[in-house]
Amino acid sequence: MTCSSFLNGFPPGVPVQCNLLPGGLATVVGYPLDTIKVRIQTQHMYSGVWHCILSTYRREKVYGFYKGMALPVLSVAICSSVCFGTYRNSLHFLGQFRHGSSALKPSRLDVFVAGCAAGTVEAMVFAPIDLIKIRQQNQTHPHQPYQGQSSHGLLTMPKYRGPIHCLITILKEEGTLGLYRGITALWLRDIPCFGLYFVAYSVFSEQLTPQGQHKPDWLGKLVAGGCAGTTYWILATPMDVMKSRMQMDGMGQQKYNGVLNCITQSFRQEGMRVFFKGLSLNCVRAFPVNGMTFAIYETVLVFLKKANLKD
Image 1 (cartoon, rainbow, N blue to C red):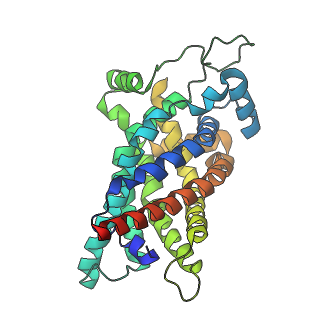
Image 2 (image 1 turned 90 degrees about the vertical axis):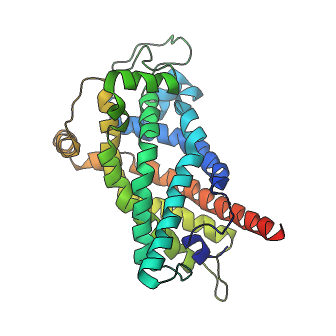
Image 3 (image 1 turned 135 degrees about the horizontal axis):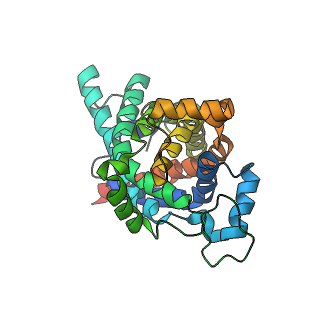
């Protein structure tokens, strides 16, 4: 599978559900760092990354790093399918509309616009899943009865007993719209950043393709995907902080009445550094997770394409 074939979407007959393997593995690998990132962004009791890691382990053991993981793992194929499916269809439409054919290699602008469309639609599916995940990640109660000293600000009893109970509770307390709390911030994060994410992958892939070949090797795909993921999170982290805070806002007394208010209050209380909370964790997690996602994803597509040609 060449770089241009990836940018043009999936080969004919290849099921979108091949996202399940790389997406599920990537979620499991990066989830502990995601939990620490979310807690640092939304809670004020931690002085830094290591303090959060140690506090989580002492109180909740390994279980604490994987709270809320079930729903993201089970839904990763759906979210990836929506994202890449929208991306493919958008590229097809843009190719027909702008160039009269979808067979031509898309321009950087085509890739960016298609990526923005993918981010728009994916956020609609991802928003409730992400909200439920973040609510569970922020429950700092121990899996077993806690025998240590009590800590100020930590929950002693969980509000949500699992993803289904969390979903039902949110619907009862906040209504259907409660599941989409923070979606404006999510759109502000994902629409431009998804566009740049796909552009970055195409640029790095081309740069890493050996002269005389049409595609990078497996290591090249791994590096290109990792660089694209890192680029995404460098740009997305400021709005990611706002999104996480707004999603947590419904768990207690509501503090923010909109994205702008959340930005203003956060800046007044914590200064510029608030917009970069979790940036280092996002970057550390982004490279292996996205590198593995793209490398395995393209490898699976090549395998399935060959299998289709044999049938």
